[in-house]
Image (cartoon, rainbow, N blue to C red; front, side, top):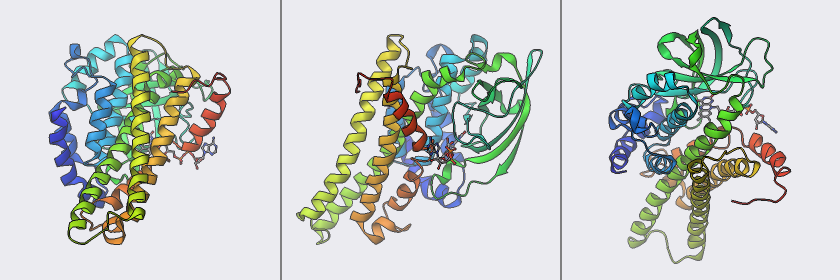
Length: 383
Ligand SMILES: Cc1cc2nc3c(=O)[nH]c(=O)nc-3n(C[C@H](O)[C@H](O)[C@H](O)COP(=O)(O)OP(=O)(O)OC[C@H]3O[C@@H](n4cnc5c(N)ncnc54)[C@H](O)[C@@H]3O)c2cc1C
């Protein structure tokens, strides 16, 4: 994917400013639109690149070596695209996917709710059905790229009498909504994702429901969770890998000038432990990606407990181990290279960014889910 290599230098150039100003990387998104990469997962019949999860993972990993915020923006857009490709009805696919492929539509995701928090499979604000139109009012506390998105995939309670677990996913064009920003995004890291709070209201046609009404759980298991966990993990790995590559180059260069003693067993052990964390994430990511791709190719479902455990484990392991690797890199590099914002290696930013990984869908939620799922997979089907 040679185009991605060209994008990485632009992302790396803009990364410090995007982080310092906590601003959305407009120039990077523009380049992604022009490159055709917003349509990576759009089938060729709709004018897209027609690629699969292998390429999504590889591009996400690569882009993250330049700017983790931008890579996450892109990976989450791909996640939403996959949901549309697999679950939108033929009319919505025909209407929307050519525009995504042409780079006209950048998609944002709204699942988090002001009251029920991060829980993916519950929603409070409900859809009102009026003939062929659906009316929605949604408070969304965290929406990556929400101010710049051209369309939104939004989880809603299916109707006014529905229980909170009867969730419907609905697509809305920005132009059909009134969108008001309610919160700023002033965070420790991932500042370039500009994940602000929004209040959205408007009406959308009934055929903009994605998947069966009230059964978002099926869309989540088949598409949103697999692509999310694969894409995020690839991004986190890429950011840590990029920083580590720069650090080992710097250590090697400084050793020639009488800097770090690379024959020191302490230094070697520290380097080896970082490498160990990255190797484990990389291997687990590859295995889960292969498992999901194989199931998809053979038309099988992804909702078996063991498959869901593997997907959750990937997110848990990638978020914890890449952050641990970044922490270890800071220690190995020392104060001026590891901890200073003026360092030639952006370790300080990568450390702050990766701290969000365990929060970006709370690891506690995935651990409790995996505890329960493990009781259903008594044969212990390991990846
Ligand atoms: C960079 C970034 C980008 C994001 N982009 C988006 C976006 O575009 N769209 C969107 O909708 N959301 C987005 N989110 C939000 C994200 O998906 C999560 O919903 C959010 O991070 C969860 O926030 P929370 O920890 O406050 O909430 P919750 O998940 O509600 O958790 C609240 C607290 O309860 C704890 N907890 C939860 N469940 C359990 C349990 N079972 N056992 C014990 N403790 C538990 C958690 O650890 C946490 O301390 C983004 C988040 C980040 C960091």
